[in-house]
Image (tube, rainbow, N blue to C red; front, side, top):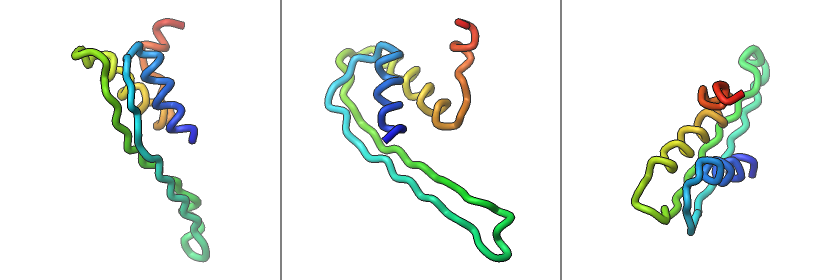
Length: 84
C-alpha cells in the first residue's frame, strides 16, 4: 500500500497531471532457516502501474517515475538534497 501511495505522491510532487491510474503491487517476503539463516530475510516488491497523462509533455512523468524508483530503493534524489 505504501508503494502505491508513493507512486501517487511522486506524480503529484512532480506536477505530472494524470488520470486513470491503475496497477498492482506485489510483495514477496522470504525467511531463511537452518544453514541459510546467514542470508537473513529478503523482501522483493514489484510495482506495475499505468496512467494517462493529461498533456503530451512527459518530462514531469519521467521525473516522477525516477523519484519513485529512488524512493523505493531508499535513495534521496540529488535535486531534493540541493533544495535543502
